[in-house]
Length: 125
Image (cartoon, rainbow, N blue to C red; front, top):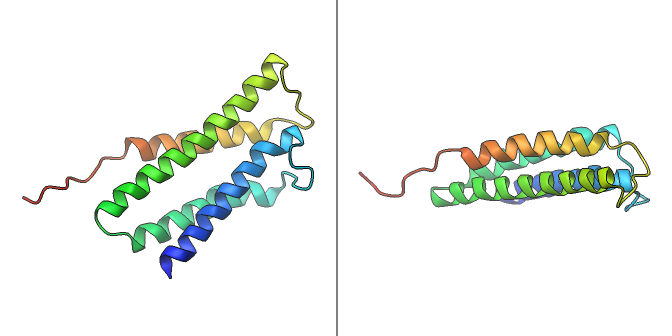
């Protein structure tokens, strides 16, 4: 039950992050960047990751850290790409790009911290 609930929370956090990245460009006209998305992105991703970590054992915990790192750094990269495309004038944002900066800083910082987390040794001493 923890795995399912944790996976749903992580998925909700990722969707909120993608909404924050897509909303300045009007890609998703039905989804607007709101305060709830700003809170749901880090909060539900963190809560889901904690639930998944509580259900994980041994090697699965290391895979969970890699998954968190890869998804957050991927989201930060997409956000940076959006900022760069708007800077170069290739893609004009319809709204302010503050949400892109927010995702870049939060996802980039936490994703880097997850990538730099020490790995547990698999050998038994």
